[in-house]
Image (cartoon, rainbow, N blue to C red; front, side, top):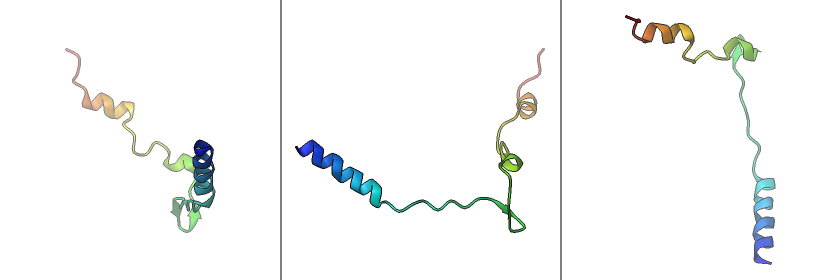
Length: 56
């Protein structure tokens, strides 16, 4: 029965947990589409080509 009590207690903890507040990026007070900032801080192929040594 101890296992069942632990399970019930953990479920109560999950239910009582406060919800997360997510702030979305905004531009001039309007929400920005995900497509506008998706992949912004990513190492792209063009940057990889510049970083790698040139073939001999």
